[in-house]
Amino acid sequence: MGASKKRGALLWVLMSLALLCSACSTPRQGKEPKSAVYYTYFDTVSCIYSYAEDSENRFADNTAIAAGVLEDYHRLFDIYHEYAGINNLCTVNRLAGGAPVAVDQRLIDFLRYAQQMYEITGGEMNIMMGSVLKLWHESYVRAMDDPDMASLPDPRAIAAASVFTDPALLEIDEEACTVRITDPNASIDVGALGKGYATEQAALALQDAGVTGYVLNIGGNIRILGSKPDGSGWRTGVRNPSDPDGAYARYLDLHDISCVTSGNYERYFTVDGVRYHHIIDSDTHYPADYFSSVTVLSADSAMADALSTALFCMPYEDGLALAESLDGVQVLWILPDGRQLSTKGMEAVTVSP
Amino acid sequence: MKKRDFILIGGILLFALAALLAVELSKEPGAYVIVRVDGEETARYSLSQTLTADINGGTNTLHIESGKAWLTQAQCPDHLCIKRGMIDEAGETITCLPNRVTVTVYGTETGVDLVS
Amino acid sequence: MANTSKSAPRRVAFLGLFIALAMILSYVESLIPPLVAVQGVKIGLPNLVIMFMLYRVGSREAITVSLIRVVLVSLLFSSAMSMAYGLAGAALSLSGMMLLKKTGLFSPITVSVVGGVLHNIGQIAVAILITGTKQLVLYLPVLLISGVIAGVAIGICAGLLIKRFEKLRF
Image 1 (cartoon, chains in turn cyan, orange, green):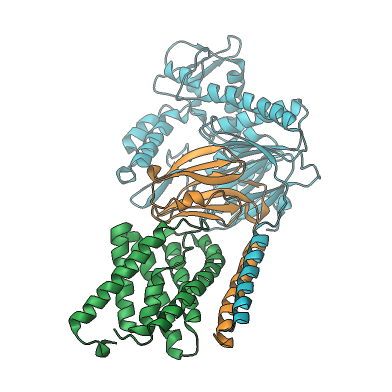
Image 2: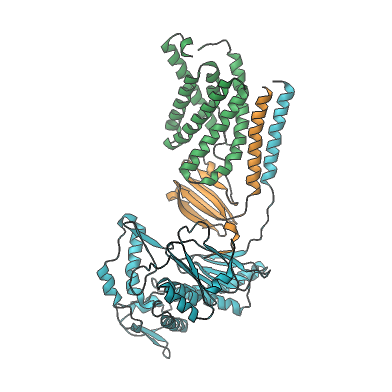
């Protein structure tokens, strides 16, 4: 080939290289929210986001407020560890059947709230399920250690444990600020309510500090404070239970509200090809199978958390009646076949993908 | 070399450059990474955190900081995966073929702020 | 071609020589520090041997040497895993080069370019299958460009060799 053609080819290559380099260095922009992430609370990931144009210092101060509250409740609600200087639920469980335990006023308030929730949900939200949940938890941990050794809890053990799930086994003395579990076989497990309650308390603390335009996402427990600075809502994707990593089942536009989803895809183990998830129906003492997921919107994050679990464990008709009896509660039910049922207010905040 | 040689080579280059341009233009900032070993997802991490994690039982070590992810340690002959450097945009992948490990950045799917 | 060789032992000896040469070039290439940190961006030095064989010895011999080189190199220097990448790349690249050469329309440089590009396509396809990461396809453009550049370089060198050894018969 001729010299000029060779030069032409060389030019070609050089030009392509130049183009390649310029394409790589195209600047991109996009406003990222400020965020803080903690791994220490409630065995989950806690994220605090803000689109508000706070200074770094202000953001740090605000996240410290929320983290402080989460830390306190994490310790109070921990059923696996005790901490020096405080009596937490682990202490209360350990001393079940014994003398009353002096506890923090915040724990008393929480346990009272849990009792109210028990009434409201017709017993579906029961923190005295500890004895049964312990068995399922053990099976779950065993399955995680070695999936081949996965096995269900012994049905007889479940039947025996279920005797000790009566909420009356918990005595609260508000004046003395003590609590007592009256039977040594009973225990408290706040898995279905604790995170939501703590999230709400953290949100209230932020509200007291005049904070707006923030979001707390404590292991999927979403609590939104206000709107984004430009007034728009927070675009929230609801996972598709049959493909949690895929396209969302629904998009919501949310302001100043809490959003909590309970789903059968979150934590489960498999025995003989059958999935057993972590949401245990307090009636059957087995995983509930009415729905694949239930998403609840409510101003109060504790309410949203409690209801998402309770509604997951009751038929649609009962759940709808319960949701409609409560103020400002919206629900999205996703059925195992993928069908979606929802309350009117849920439709109102649904937006196109 | 004849004209048709140039046309064929030029065609391949043109196609590659067009594809490259398309890839570059469609890039969006990343939100999280998915770690795969042998094609199976073993972990996913948000890019909005600081973290160091062992992959594949320690054959590689992943570090995430300031919205970028990179490998800091690798038990493989070529260490190409470490030389690959930082990735932070959706679609970018660090590959360690000897250990069959990939770390791929994903963006916020269709622009949601939150996931429930 | 086989019928031009004088004896079977001579043919075997030459094949051994070419295999050794291709393996040495693989080794030399592994010593070159990577220019770009994308897996698969390589010059493809062994392709020099394959190109030469395609033009001066024969297709069957080129296939033999190519496959034996891939198998031996991955057994000796890396893992059985890299054999999958190597074989996929080599098979695709060789078939493409042979087809193109058969048309008689293109120069060795173009044949080598197509070989380089197909080699990279084959490798990335296997990598996607093995790692289950389809995003790797996004690296195809870079690998195509690198394949073209490497192909041109190898093609020019191979062209010189082919001309120099015009009168030789193996």
